[in-house]
Image (cartoon, rainbow, N blue to C red; front, side, top):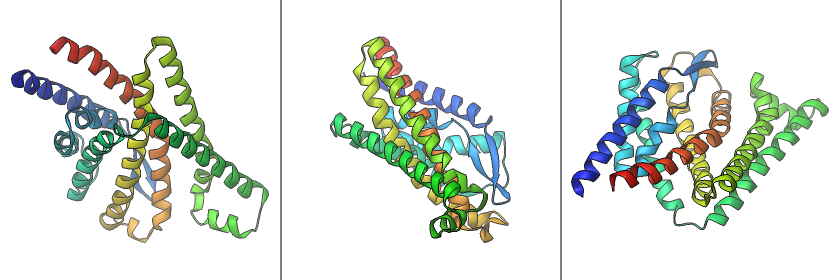
Length: 259
């Protein structure tokens, strides 16, 4: 039994690491604050799953492995050791949060998800109204303080909320079609796990990038932070949806065959 478990862990983790590295090499770097500091990629779908399946100890190893191998294959600027540390956090923390979320009643998680997505949508609509209909006001001045990224706080938040509800509906349709409650519940749990992890790691990474990348040290923190946080919230439902599908396939197909 232990031999089967060891083989399953090694094969599954190695496969997910390989896929994550390939996807990482296809990422898109967007300049923010005059330097390449915003990376768009879906490699997190595969780098987070080993920790969720096998536990935090596996997760804390996967992040640095993916980070180091990805850098060796396709270097992107100078190597920053602290980013390897946050890579470990990005794959270990989801495993811890996932384990904790399983102890919480699903209905509470679903209600919190809907409440948060609704709040983001309303906030985006209010900010859009201020930006377009309330010139020369105190609130607009605050929004404009982030420069050309002001619309991230308006239409950007509306898009995030819309995407959150779209994936919730897709999960509902999937559940009705395949009569599967587990997949639907896991989507909500993973959405929260991915968002919390993304916000924490992106915040730490922003401080690190400001310290290590020339030119970013003088850029306002919020100018760098807001686009990164918006990206994390925007991609979270996408990651959570595909992670829940892969987790379902793994539990129903792989484990069953290896049992």
